Image (cartoon, rainbow, N blue to C red; front, side):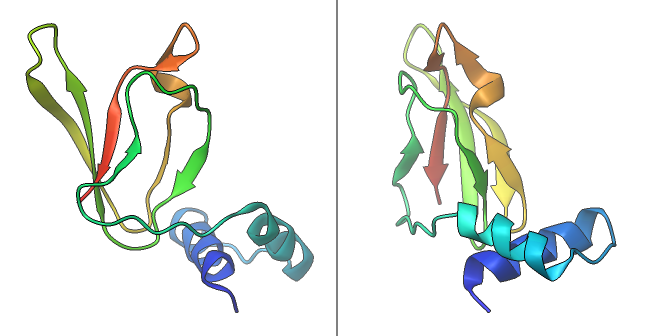
Length: 102
């Protein structure tokens, strides 16, 4: 079983407690791409044009904003098994926050 497929299955079990049919699970896993980030890598930076959906398989991510004075304001920490997206933090087509791998 691929790592993406296993992660999708675990996510479904975590939130819905139902079994996904084998063909549907395969289709969902085929949509994904496994990407690894090192600590301190920016996954998404403010100003990027992006609208992806991410499933964090392992690790920790920090979502933060920079204010007008350049101060770093942590908004949220995301942990393994969580889904996150930039879609809800887009202004005029550009992302307004940063997602950093920890």
